[in-house]
Amino acid sequence: MRVLICEDNFIVAMETEMHLEDLGHESMGIVARSSEALARCEASAPDLVLVDLNLADGRTGLDLVAKLKSWGIPSIIMSGETEYLDGSEDALAVLEKPVHPVLLERTLERVSQQVSA
Amino acid sequence: MTESSGSSTKQEGFSADDDSMVGDRLHQLLNCTVAFAALLTPQGLVKDVSHNALAVAGIGLSDVKGRPFWDGYWFGHSSKTQRMIREAVERAAEGETVRFDYVARVMDDQRLTIDFQVAPIRAKDGTVAEVVASGFDVTDREIARTRLEMLLREQNHRIRNLFSTIRAIANMTFRLSAPEEALPRFTARIDALAAAHSAVENLDGEGSLSFPALARKVLRPHMLRSAAVRISGPEARLRRDVGKMLGLCLHELASNAVRYGALSGDEGWIDVRLSRTEAGAASFSWVENGGASAPTEHGQGYGMRFVTSSLRGIFGAPAELEFRPEGLSLVVKGAVEDIFVT
Image (cartoon, rainbow over all chains, first blue to last red; front, side):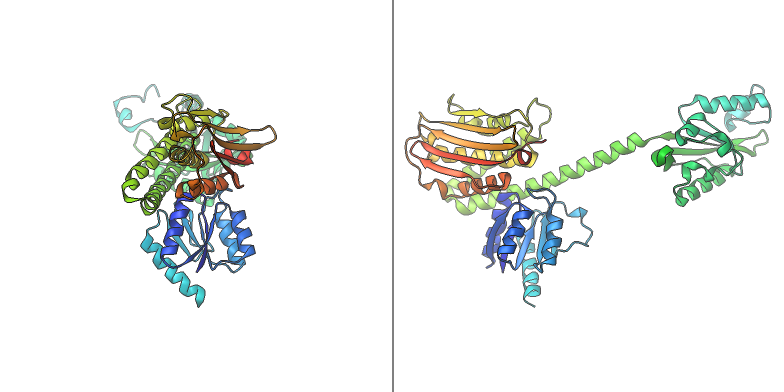
C-alpha cells in the first residue's frame, strides 16, 4: 500500500515509516499538519493515511479522519489519547501509542485486505 | 430549648415544640450558619428557609412556604434531583440521616454543587417532629477536582508520548549507526530529551520555558569552551511540544557541528537565535562560524533529516540551509503563534 503518515513528532513518524517499509509498504512521506495531509491527498490519493490526533495545527486529527473518509481515503488513528474515542470515529482502526510493531503489522494486513476487497 | 436540653435530648438531638420563642430561635439559627438550611414538616412541607438559600435562588420565603420542599426552585431543573430530594426527606421522616452531593439550580439558571444532608428532629416522645435540610456549596472543590483529573490525564498522555519518543529514538539510532557508535549516540539523544524535558516542564524556575533557557540546558555539554555557543532569544514561553522538538533539533545540530562543523576545532563558534517580530513572524537561525572544513555529509544523515523535517513541522515552512566553508547556516521562518504561548 501507499501510505501517508500524519504525525507531528517526527522521530516517531520516522520509526513508523521504517516499520512500514520493512513490511513492504511504500511511504508517501510525513506531514505534521492536517492541512498538509489534505493537500498531499488532493495531489495524489494514498491507499491509507496514518493519523495522530494531536498535530502541529492543533487537535485536528479527528476532523482529518472524517474528511478523508468523505473523500474515500481510509485511515488509521495512532494516538496516545485513545481513551477520548468512543468508537464512532471514521477510521478503520485505532492503535494506542506506543504502537507495538506486531499490532501495526496485523492491522495493516487487515486494512490491506479491506482496501483491496 | 432551655427546659428540654437535658441529658436525654443530647442523645436524640434537638427537640422541637410549638413554643414561639423556640421557633424564633430556630429561625435565627438557620440564618446564623454559613450553610444553606431549611426546616420542613415530616411530610416535607417547607416551614422556614435560611436567607442565603433564598437569596442565592432569587426567591422569597412565600414562594416555597407550605409547599413540598422538592418542588422548590433549587431542584426545578431536574426531575431526577427532585426525586432524590423527596426520597431523602421521606427517609429522614423515618428517622434516618441522609447525605449526598447534588447539583442545585440558582439565580440566572446557574448551577452549584451542594454537599447536602437531611436529618430528623425528634420530639420528646421520640417521634420525628421536623426535618432539617442543610447544604454546603462545594462547587469550587468540584471544579478543582475536575481540573486535577484533567491535568493528570494530560500528564499521562505526555508520559505515553515520551515512551513513544524514546522507543523511536532507540530504533532509529541503532538502525542507522555503526555498532560502536550506536550506544553513545543513543544516550546523548536521551540526555538531550531529558534536558529539553526539564527546561520545558519545570514551572518553578523563572523563565524556564524560554528559548535561551532551553538552549542553555541542551547545549551545555558544548559550552565548556566559553564563546563556543552564543544564544539569544526572547524570554517568552515556548509552546511545550515545540520546546521539546526544538531541544532535540539543537542537540542534533550541535552533534553535527562537533563532527563536521564549527565545533570540530578550537576556533569556531555558533550563533543560535530565536527571534520574533511585532508583525507576528518568528525565525530560528543556527549559524556556524570559524569552522575548519566544508562539510558535505551534513545533509545526509538521520540527524539532519530529523532536524529539517522537525523544523518544517514546527514552523510550517522549509528551512534554508547553506553549507559554507566556515560551517552550516540554517534559517527557518514561521508564525509567532506556532512557537510561543500567546
